[in-house]
Amino acid sequence: MAKIRIAFVGTGGRSWTHIERLGNFGDVELVGFMDVIPERAIEKQAKTGQGKAYESYIEMLDDAKPDVLYVCVSPDGHGAIEREAIARGIHLFVEKPMALDMAMAEEICASAKAKNLVTCIGFQDRYLDLVEQARDWMAGHKVGLVDGAWVGGLPGPPWYPKYATCGGQLLEQNIHIFDMLRFLFGEPASVYCSGGRGIIAMEGYDLHDYSSAVITMESGVVATLFSGCYLGEGSPGYVCGMNIHCADRTIRYKLRDKVTLETRTENITYWKRAADWQTTMNRVFIDAVKTGDTSAILSPYEDALKTLRLCLACNESMETGQVVKL
Image (cartoon, rainbow, N blue to C red; front, side, top):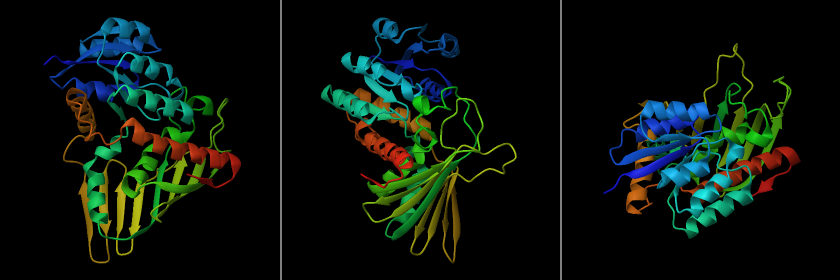
């Protein structure tokens, strides 16, 4: 069987995670790299020794003729790229968040579905064995409250400090924790979110420095998720992840590091990890492209839309001060 031909639009830091894993697969060929900063595409092509670097994704799609396109661009960069790929019948791996506009994301999802294309959104935590261990420890135990957080410093990308290009920290970064909430506990019924500003002083910066979202799930579970990007060099840091409070136990998930079961009589820690979850995610996606069987993809575009909708609802609640029903 011919190798799966893969091209990349966006070759910044996140793309290398995928490129590195795909480079170890004997059944794929990296055929094209394109970035708005051409030097980055040239660098990735040189590192892999495969394909060509391009300055235009249209030129790349015309010339390289990929079977699969990885879209690893800034949050505001989505739309035209996906539409072009779908029109050509190219399968899509899209990094989160896949849009800043719900209507556009729904349109892209419907178009890809109509063409029977394989899609995957990069919600990597779903592939962690730590998360499966947490699920196992929860099984059969009633959950009431959940609290979680992604609190840290200001990320470095130049597009990050503006809502127009980033969508806010809750959407751009903490979307992983919000997605895990859905993955473990089902769908949300409503959200109320409050945020604040005033700690970060930077010209052009207009994000909330921190926020707290209270999400009521259809199951009755109530979750409070904190987001923050204001911690400075003097801060001791923050334990990012999720705490699940059952009637008889607490399960603590430290982001991509470990999961701990606590009861009155035991304290058990399960450390990462039996398999590299990034490899697993990419392998599952490529196998789905090869076989047409998408059942092992844990976050296809259609499911990821629900996480995007939740995070955009949180942004809406922050701006309006109102509960948003989902």
